[in-house]
Amino acid sequence: MSRIYLVDDHAIVRDGLRAMLETSGYTVVGEAAEPTTALADVLKLKPDLLLLDLSLESRSGFELLTEVHRRALPVRCLVLTMSAQPRHVAEAMRLGAAGYLLKGSPRAELLRAIDEVARGRRYLGPEVADLAVQALTASGDEAELLNSLSPRERQIITLVVKGQSSPMIGAQLHLSPKTVDTYRSRLMTKLGVSDVTALVRFAIRNGLIDADGN
Image 1 (tube, rainbow, N blue to C red):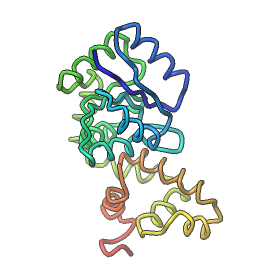
Image 2 (image 1 turned 30 degrees about the vertical axis):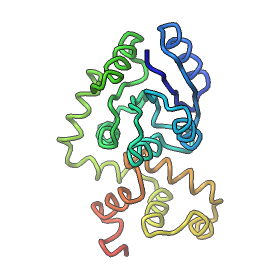
Image 3 (image 1 turned 30 degrees about the horizontal axis):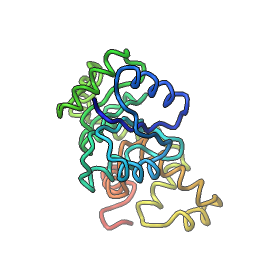
Image 4 (image 1 turned 135 degrees about the horizontal axis):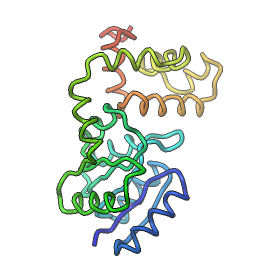
């Protein structure tokens, strides 16, 4: 049976997952509520499978997927999340996630997904497969998403893509650097991007800045 590592910012969810997985014969080697701890543990514990949420309080599960992908770590990733946004499905798969399942799926489906991913296959729940197709066919999706941003969110995304640090942005907007970091992580999750480079591409495509960064 696979050795599994859990990443979710709700302790009660991790407890429930651990109990369910262990009674099904799996070994849960560790758990974390945020990406930094999770990455350190993955490097040390070397689990077979990473079961992670995308929304982690002020952080994003995309950060962890990005690092696993960048370092080519030998761990299979299965996303278990509330997010039913097509762009999130597409970005997770682009970053190497082997499966994507929505929270609220039946226990049997989660176990099936884990088995499939552990065997080296991909697994998308039935509704997630439809979301992946939507991500490929959506055209005005980004414009609609841009319109949903608040004026403060637009300010922060513009300053981030212009290369300003959190302390610099905080000083201009009278916010603490930690608050700016929280805004940035939430924005990246909301927009379905995994790093600042992807955020810059989004900003250029949607006219927030030009190709010269102005």
